[in-house]
Image 1 (cartoon, rainbow, N blue to C red):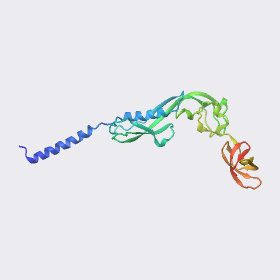
Image 2: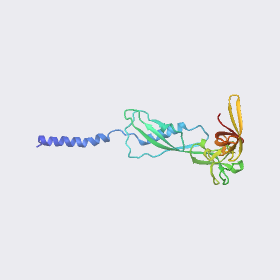
Image 3: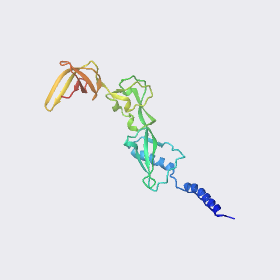
Length: 236
């Protein structure tokens, strides 16, 4: 015989059993679709090039449970930063689920790039005979690599590099045009007025670098911008 008290227990048990079933019945967003949205965003932002790009999103935790988004997923670059070998891409659902998750996306480039044939010391100029074109697959975007000999003109290595090193824009610095201790011309101008004075370089620098120079006559130390091998422009 089922008493009133027993009915209460039966109803409570039924509700307890139904709760997890309701939870499991909720639609879940496939994490593969989130990764695919992040990869698609990166591919859309890559520069047009003959290079071959490899775009791979880092795997998300398979235990992740995101509510199914009823609208197309929206992807964006975190903080509007520049794409690199490793970028963080946000993927959000703007529908009723309203969630956002961040995915790390790796980019590799397969392209012809200049590679050092021999080891070179720090501050060494790079001559055409020092390099050769090779097809390499490397982390990053093609624009970061050097594949044109013309890009070596007027530049030197930032640091010593061994043979076989691919050349990147980060590894090159402008030639040193003014060296420490060198006599230079200080040039200041405003409209049609131009003033020249002799100076003594206290630091060294390449084109457009800021260096410190001491005026030979006044002994005043000023800071100016290197224009060429013998001229430093200063403000009036």
